[in-house]
Image (cartoon, rainbow, N blue to C red; front, side):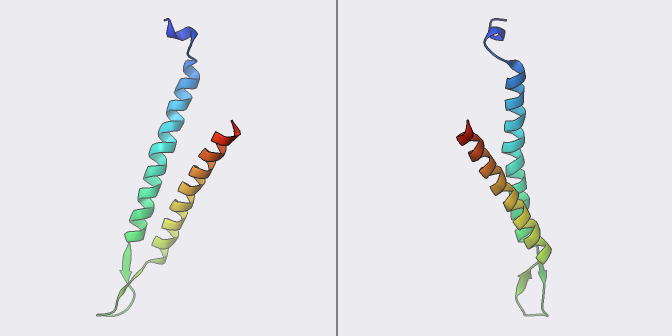
Amino acid sequence: MIASSYVTWKAMWEILVIGLVAGAGLVAVFSVGVVALSITRRIGGPGESEGRNVVGWALAALCFLVVLGGIAFGISVMFTK
């Protein structure tokens, strides 16, 4: 193939896999965080307002921190090269 002399196929596959994992993976983690925020339970009796589940808040915070970490890592990689 003509492209074989110009393209490093191993590097091309690494870029593809990392792009899919980082792109789709971060979106999936973000969506889990949004779903975790929507988990509610009744705190009080009838007629009282609903509150957020502590586990839902913790899971959402963890997911959003992972997403922010991925964004920060991506930016740091771009600036170091």
